[in-house]
Amino acid sequence: MAQITRQAVPEELTWDLASIFASDDNFELAFQAVVQAAEALQQYQGQVGTSATSLVTALQADLKLERQFEKVFVYAHQKYDQDTTNDQYAALNARVQSLYAQVSQATAFIQPEILAIPNEKLDQYLANPVLKPYQHFLAVILQQKKHTLPADQEALLAGASDIFNASQQTFGALDNADIEFGTVTDENGQEVELTNGLYSILLQSQQGSVRQEAFDQLYDAYIGLKNTFASTLSANVKTHNFLAKTRHYQSARQAAVTPNQIPEEVYDTLTHSVNEHLPLLHRFVALRKQVLKLNDVHPYDLYVPLVEEIDYKVTYQEAQEIAVKALAPLGEDYIAIVKKAFAQRWIDVVENKGKRSGAYSGGSYDTHPYILLNWQDTLDNVYTLVHEMGHSVHSYLTRHNQPYHYGDYPIFLAEIASTTNESLLTDYLLQTHTEPKFRAYVLNQYLDGFKGTVFRQTQFAEFEQWLHEQDAAGRALTADVMSEYYGQLNQKFYGPDLFPDEQIAYEWARIPHFYYNFYVYQYATGEAAATTLSDKILNQNGASAYKTYLKAGSSANPLDVIQAAGVDMRSSAYLDQAFELFEARLTELETLLTR
Image 1 (cartoon, rainbow, N blue to C red):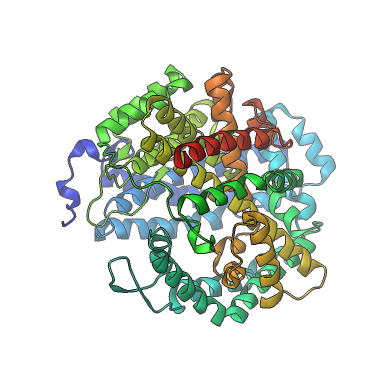
Image 2 (image 1 turned 60 degrees about the vertical axis):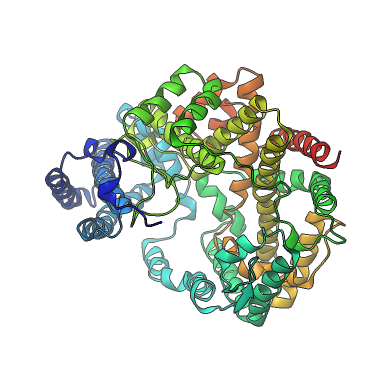
């Protein structure tokens, strides 16, 4: 069936971008205003540190420019995303990308000039009432002071950024373009070209031979290039360690987490707690062995659904009703925002020709949030809706309770709001459905998600830490060295029922996350925190405290923000609570599938 064109989509199923700019002409006026503001900002260059008044004036001009630009960006970006075949908006989007470079260049002097203010003078400035609204904002910038080099050295490092990114770019070219996996036979007996995308689908096949062939074929290609992939990953690790040492950090991990105001103990607490609870993952693997009637569980058997797809068709209208009921424990004020999103066309719902794939929540400080969907009548799409709604309500409450400079939130906190909504939906579905097959399906979806986000991402985090420690100690990261450790780590995580196929030891070669510089641990902490928060909302009257987190934006340290909602991420208690829920739901699934 052919996709409908953008013009054929009913207006009520499209987002209302006219609430940003009534017309393209209005956009053009705003675009030119950004250009002029960028040029005008240059009058403050060299003046930022001359007085408290000069500092606050330059800051306000900088923030006003960024605020103006964001609104222009959102309009062009979303006009393009709704139909990427529209040449007019493709050109508009390209112009805004160029404008972004212009704005970045215009604002580049602000932070270095702040960091160049002598400490004694800066203390005097900060005592001035005019800077009181910016205390935390400046504190976040100033924490980088001891890690900021003299201007000429900063310029040298900036000029070498392409060199530092070369190994990641090489990996991307290899993994996305150059590597070839050949052909395999699918479930229908058809010969198909194997790709990374198709691989993930074939691993869910109920036919073991299909899974095994895809697994063997894919890893043959990676193993054939193992030394090349080892070289790119090793070079990437060396870059992280070099930059950390250059900026006077004790380690690459410290250099990665400190700018986000996250202490390293959060990382260590996560890996320690997950290791303590690995027997739960081992139980889940053992259940898989029993239900699928396998003599051995191979790595390619870990993604087969234990429960067949259920016939549960959900229209978009029905999904809205489910979302309102599932999120009701968050309070009438929260639900009022959700209903506003549905009524005021914050959401672009259906798929059309040329529309960007996937889903996201967007918007700026001076617009309401927007959600892009590509709706299909499935339960998975209901989860996508509440997930993106979590981001959007988070953005809405932050922007309505914080000034612009605190009107966004750090990535460490971003996924907690969306995942909490998913947890509330899971609880609602389990509370309102008694039929065993439906419950088993929802439980299996939850457990697989937890496995992939908490256990698997922590496995990646542990490997990433080991990589950097090995290089810092002067040990060579060869393909054989990395594969030996990774194979042992994988076996530790999945337990005695996993057959140690030698290919899985080379999985490190195909994981792009290892180039992200200590990023993946946040997936695991966010999922665990969301699980704990949803329990507090449902069972401990935690909705009010939770919404203080949604309103806080970046006005305080991220750990302090989430602690006010009831989760101390310096402690393992939130992880223990998440694992308790995982175990309870695993126990129910074991009962449903083996009785």
